[in-house]
Structure formats: structure tokens, C-alpha cells
Image: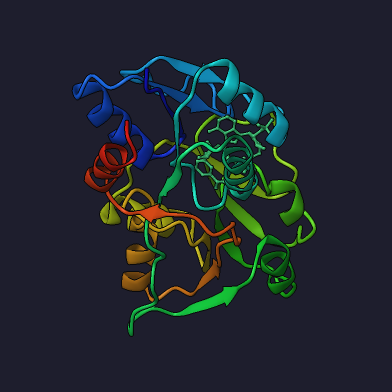
Length: 245
Ligand SMILES: NC(=O)c1ccc[n+]([C@@H]2O[C@H](COP(=O)([O-])OP(=O)(O)OC[C@H]3O[C@@H](n4cnc5c(N)ncnc54)[C@H](OP(=O)(O)O)[C@@H]3O)[C@@H](O)[C@H]2O)c1
């Protein structure tokens, strides 16, 4: 029997899970287990790493997985690389559900940097009030620039943060432009640091930055191995139908 593994943790993965469940397709949804209390899915769900490429290849064999969709976040490059390699090793049809990059408009003021390390370097300078919208995983790196006041928006309340001068806003989104304008005004934000995640869920802060005339330090996406990419749930359902699901 066909069995789809969805590598999830994104709005797009959740929409795909809903469509797959509605069609009655056999599928499993996989979370990394980074956030407490992840959203329930209308599919059987597993939580936690697989154990690298070998672990995922074993999982695919042991659970009779016949198709894999990588619907992880564009910055989850380790998982995306592992999935590409494990599927190639096991001969499993594999594709990614992705979202286009955000593109700078005329009214935007972006500085693009190649990765987290370059973003940290770019913050070397006088103290500013920085909205650091990069999630929880890379806070340690930014603690190397402790002169700034950081506004951190996180999904879960952290036990502590590594920078001396920070305010934490706990929220899961979706966010609105009006809400983000209010947030940035309240915190006196002077600079936004953002990953180029794409999609609509986290876009509001960029539109808010544009309206407030604030600069954005935009972190480019990491590279991932060549793969079949699709932009919509409908395309994934089509791809499944065409790959013998
Ligand atoms: N990075 C972001 O900015 C971001 C933002 C929003 C949501 N997310 C979601 O958060 C999760 C982790 O992201 P990340 O950037 O930490 O990933 P990552 O650095 O690429 O992955 C590190 C390890 O976490 C495990 N892992 C990641 N995603 C998994 C999944 N969906 N199911 C099972 N194991 C997974 C894998 O462990 P093993 O090697 O042991 O298999 C992987 O090697 C992903 O599901 C992603 O979609 C990430």
C-alpha cells in the first residue's frame, strides 16, 4: 500500500496534511519536536529526529514509506539534505513543497546577507533596538553582539535568553501588518533581522518595516540539493497521482 511521509513543521505542510487526510490517502506527518505542544494534525503523527540519513533510510524501509514530501521550512537545510539523500539511497520518489523567496520592493530598505554568521557580523556597530525575528535556534550566535537591545518573538516562552538586553514576545502567529507596526512602535524598533522564509505567515513584519521606513537585514536561504519542487498542495497531489501513489 502507498504511504506518504510528510516532513512538516510549516503552514504549507499543515495545509498538505489537511488535503491528504480529506482525500483519505495513507500518510504520516513528521515533526522535529522543536516546539512544545505542536499543532495536532489530521494524520498519524510522529515526533523527533530520524537519526541522520541512515536513520531516515531505515525509517522509510521499516514503515513502508513509498513517497516523501519535504515540506519543512526553507532554513531546515539539514533535514532537506538528509531527505534527498535517504530517498536517493532507498529509491523513494521525493519532492519538496516550497514557497518562493520574498523579493525586495522599491519602497523596501534591505541589506542581504548570506547566512546567520554574516548577519551577526553585520550587527557589529553601535547599539540599536533590533527586532530579531529568526526563531529560537540561533540566539546564541547573536549574543556575540550584546550591545543591542533585542526584541525576540518566539513560539514558546524560553527558559532564558543568551543576550543581556532583550524583550521576549511569545506568539505563534499568524501576524498582521497592523499588529507588527504596533509591536515595533512599542519596542522602538530601529532594525529588523529576518530570514528569507517566504510565504505569507511571517511576511507582515516586512510590510510593517516598509510602512515604518525601517531597514531590514535579510538572511538568504541556505542551499539544498537539487530536487523536484512544487509550490502548491494541488501540485503535490498531482505529483503523487503521477508517481503511482
Ligand atoms: N529553521 C527555521 O527557521 C524553521 C522555522 C519554522 C519551522 N521550522 C520547522 O522546525 C523543524 C526543525 O527545523 P530546523 O531548522 O531545526 O531543521 P534542521 O536544522 O534542518 O534539522 C536538524 C535535524 O532535526 C531533525 N528534523 C528537522 N525537521 C524534522 C522533521 N520535520 N521531522 C523529523 N525530524 C526533523 C532532523 O534530525 P535527524 O538528523 O535526527 O533526522 C534534522 O537533521 C522543521 O520541521 C522545520 O520545518 C523551522
